[in-house]
Image (cartoon, rainbow, N blue to C red):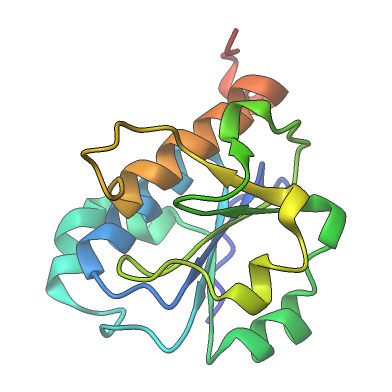
Length: 170
């Protein structure tokens, strides 16, 4: 399903590979609306997109969201065809910090499941495109919705706000 809601190109593409928790996806959808990003949901999903928890977390933002769902990773890669040199992969323990990346408008930001992250066959061929969010040793990971927001807003900080908002980040 694809629901275009804005006339301009998305600022970024946020890709969730096999998300399991509906309220994380709802929150990420809200963040994408605020940032002008498009959301790609790569299945199999751990919930129905009509799940009430996704709706509660997404509030009334979801109708304004540009998004598309794909059956699986192969379907996504074939149909969306994200450029390798514009793709970034969020990982827990590999790669450089997200702040070291040099984002460009329209980049693709990949995030994996809440429990195991992205599949190695997606990240292993691109170690220079893997990003991590630094954290203390006591923490195993950061919530998926928080992680997506951190990386997406760093990308916006580096590239500036969409012109129609009238705002800029410095």
